[in-house]
Length: 295
Ligand SMILES: C[S@@+](CC[C@H](N)C(=O)[O-])C[C@H]1O[C@@H](n2cnc3c(N)ncnc32)[C@H](O)[C@@H]1O
Ligand SMILES: [Zn+2]
Image (cartoon, rainbow, N blue to C red):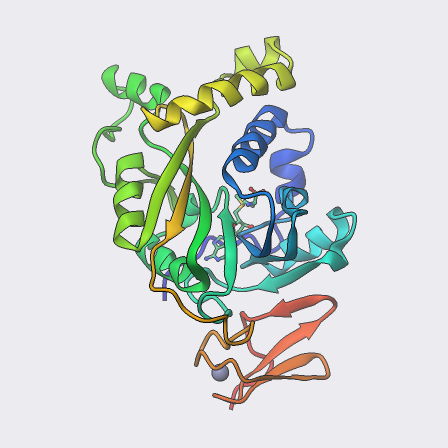
């Protein structure tokens, strides 16, 4: 088992975003996502979607899955989203996704990778569920940004921002070197094809002096330099799944324990024909974390 950063019961929407002076960060992340994600498609999943902050960006997709490890985040999404019924809300773990192979045309994950203790294992799962040549847009926190470099040069930070290995600065909070992430993506069969460096102006004084939408527009231009260098605290990468062509996906959900796609809807549950577990599905949420019943 890999440890997971548990947001169950967290007030992430209010404690981190709303009224917390992060309009700029929200705007620049939306610019990057819009620029990198194909605007239309069939099935899209956001992994670690939280309360659905970015979900309105996926309106060009026929089916949109918002997956999170914390059921309470998805319950918050039901309150936050204008039309929660348009989304497929799924409680699950990135290390064992409850979907059949090659299901998704597109996949996004923003502000999640920095909580992952086992990135290669998570990337292997992403690669499994995405279709051949499908697109993944992944955001990661970077250790190789100007503030960290300055702090290190002034000896006010012990870890080296140029060292490729991830740094865990607080338990289950990691910063990654963009080159290390690139290596991991390639090693997992996800071919990087575009990079945006994001949040150039995450500096309290500048954020105070310049209106957020101006600063965000400026960052949108500066993001293009990501193809040459990455010196920002956040980096977005678009990668394509390299895998042999395959037929259409064989189903939709699969049991995260035995991988069987034989899941029979019952009252308030999906019963797995493979291992007999029952996965809760009520209140508009499919829950593949803790089985209601295990044989
Ligand atoms: C910092 S929040 C970001 C939420 C959203 N992506 C956003 O940017 O507003 C991180 C989210 O990742 C989820 N998460 C962390 N580890 C996870 C895992 N192993 N599988 C699925 N979700 C995970 C948390 O529950 C939390 O909602
Ligand atoms: Zn099963």
